[in-house]
Image (cartoon, rainbow, N blue to C red):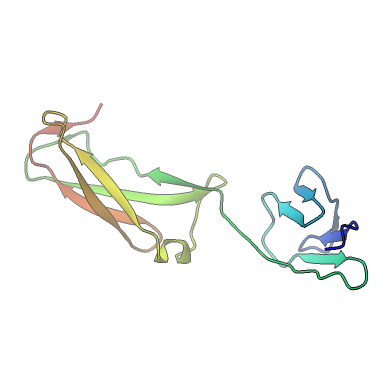
Length: 147
C-alpha cells in the first residue's frame, strides 16, 4: 500500500448506505492495511466499494465469525439411580436465538466432562452432532441429584 487513505463505501442488503465508521461498523487503518468489521450484520448480500490510488494493490479478504454461546437443555429429572441414563442435549445460540444452521454442527467437536464428586475422578464423553444439536446419554454409576 502507498500509505494513502483508502476510500470505503458500504451498503446493507437493502441497498442503504451504511456509515463507515459507525455504531455498527468498526473501521481501522494504518499505512499497511485497512480493516472493516460489521457488527451483527443483517443476513443478505452486502456491497463494499473500495477505492485506492493508482498502482496500489488492493486485496480484500472476508473473515467471518459467529457470536455463539453453547446452551444446555434443562435436564429432564432432578434425581437418578444407578443404571439410569442422563440425556445431555446442547445447542448453539446466536443473538438469543437457537442457531438452526446444521452446517455449524457438521465439524464441531465437543465433550461433556463428568465428575464423580466423591472420588474427584473425571471422565470425558464426546458429544455427537445430530440435527442441530449436540447429544450424549451418560449412564449413572450411583445415585445422583441436581440442586
